[in-house]
Image (cartoon, rainbow, N blue to C red; front, side, top):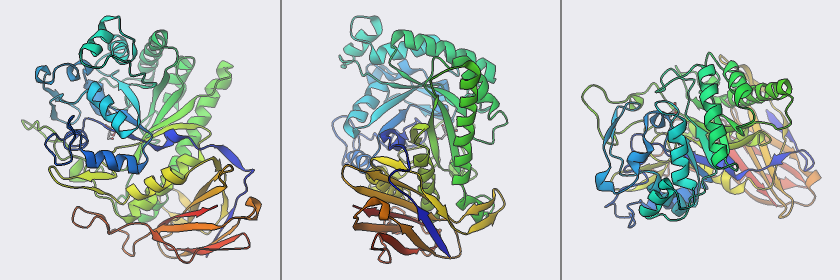
Length: 500
Ligand code: AHR
């Protein structure tokens, strides 16, 4: 079977947005403690941040990092996390049934973000708290010295405002599991009023209203409609969250997961544009896809502690990813990139240890999961304009979507440097696909490299003892002759072809 790709430099969707390559650090499990922060670790710096994790974060090519949650934020008091560490209170975190020591808070996170060279994205608590606390944390973070909260920041050793631009108005407020869960009408009101006041403090903020926690939420669609109808003038983005996993042995549907992401994005765009038409607005609302990943939620690693057990930084959501996960994951990135006209920001959930591309052993090494590779390569080589790639390929049947294409692809084209990057997945479990792409529209090109991530055993994974079991390897079958690209894409594989 063959996958034929049609692409041309004129078929541009939008510029590649650096913010597509964001990630997420939540006070959950070992993401913060023994993840980014571990004083005493052999690689830790003077602030207690693990140097190996900082290095891997930079290598991953992360653009922005959402913080401090997640479900955690909906019960969080931000002020517990500032000031002298020895005076900070420990508290129960109800979301993850853990004890939060508050050793790391906003100031520490901002110090880490600077070292990691990432843009911060800060979520406020609209679950157990409200407008006042949101304004307080904004003033603490962004106001120049001279008022109570900014002077407090200065007294804590940070005289200059942080200038955090992206703010999330709560987290997953549509979810019944969320502290302070709201109806769409209740959330629309508090989000609108919070956004209006945050803007009075600082008109240049980029504000994200909560959208749906998944496309299967009962309120999906109606939620976005009601929230945006109220908040339209005050927000820039609406969020989307999606997690995928192989369920009940249904490998075929799992391999087609990006079909759901496409549908999710297209539906939110349609709903936002419906509100735009209804309200007669010019501005368009963009999407912040600020939680996406593979997550095996039914596995024991995802079950929070119970009863009297309230541990600090327990092992939670520490999924080990296999080769197939990395292929599905690479395909989700293809979907996000393809929608760069409306997805203005995205955050891989999460960065370290918790459903993460980077894993650490306390006191020991850090290593790359299989998913690290498609993220790092896409972030590094998606440059210039995103191109719409049309393709023909055989389809395969699956219970969730009916029929899905065995291949999916997106490309980026940087006219200035003449770099063309082609990202393509073979989602079929049975057969390899013959790649066939006519690239004559791009003028004279040469093949720079072709890398394929694939393993004979789709369930092979990277572990602490064998961290290089699944890594991208040169695909020697890919050749370019007279502008014609051909090659072989093995079953269940993700490939990057670079030309210039
Ligand atoms: O990323 C893990 C959790 O998933 C987040 O805390 C929550 O927002 C989502 O349900």
